Amino acid sequence: MLTETGRVVAVEETALWVQTIRKSACGQCSAQKGCGQAVLSKFGSEVGYLKVDLNGRDPSRYRLDDTVTIAIGETVFLKSSLIIYLLPLLFLMAFIGLGEFFQLSELLSVGLAVIGLLMGGVVTRWVLSRVNRRESIEPILLDTITPSAC
Image (tube, rainbow, N blue to C red; front, side, top):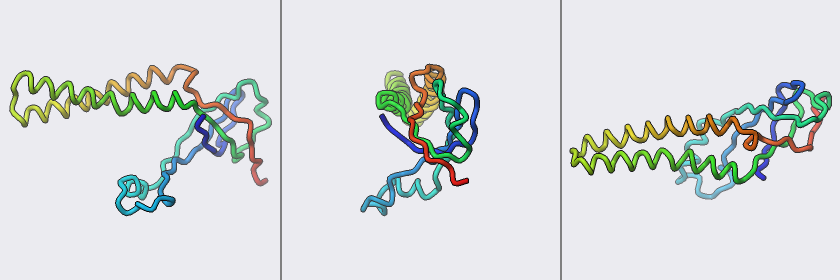
């Protein structure tokens, strides 16, 4: 299981809304100056909000600004990553293949590649929206709570 800590921003009867801050691994690596991830991380961390099901737990145990630990399965993470990265590339390569098959000019082949990449992104978005409706990919609330300082 991959775990992440987050801050409770809302408590509902059956779920918590948890704010997570996506961090990069930068700051601990010696190759910061030559790393593309280091450059991208300088634009700031991205804040995400997740709805986490309480699975029958008592919502009165949780208060705003509590720190909770949530988890997601490794297989869900790997499958999602595969879809996100591989599907657009497959579309890009298929459209390049179309350009080669029809012996189009280089400029038209590049244009087809861009169209394929964009279509791959649209298909990826559609596939992920269908997958996101399944309960198996929902984050799990682990039972570790740090009470807020009130």
